[in-house]
Length: 218
Figure (tube, rainbow, N blue to C red):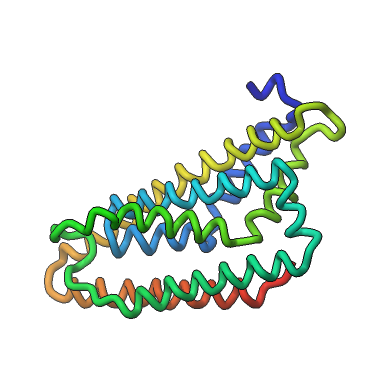
């Protein structure tokens, strides 16, 4: 597939994409927090939601709409403030929600919409981060032949490769966070308090990420 597209230095792209995907950021922290406080299933759903949000950025960048964010200070600010408000809202919601069971242990099943809710939270968290759109605009074109035909298709192909790698990394991170949380809970007394503390710590982290995004510039 890639041999027929105007793509070069694919091995370098794969290595750079892996390094970027392994770097902690709002998306990975959302996955870690969800996996640690809600278990493996919701952690994986959060990772898949992040991937879904990334698909939106790939599509917008491929058709050139993300360039508007790079060129328009107003468009960037609107998306930035909405994204920041959403992150802060998630963080405050985690503080308000009381946890009755320790993380990772057997407990009554979450409501049917729980997994779907986490999926969409992950998707919206990623979609409302304008820095993701700007990253794709800056990163992917470096590995596409300038002036060649099928540049948009090459952009989509590289974006999908990046997104698949990122989703795999986030799924592994979610499973690891859930496993660590389960082991801590298995130690016995105090696990419920640990779960509450962890949930509030993650909530505070999201408030901080929201404030950081609000103060960021292009």
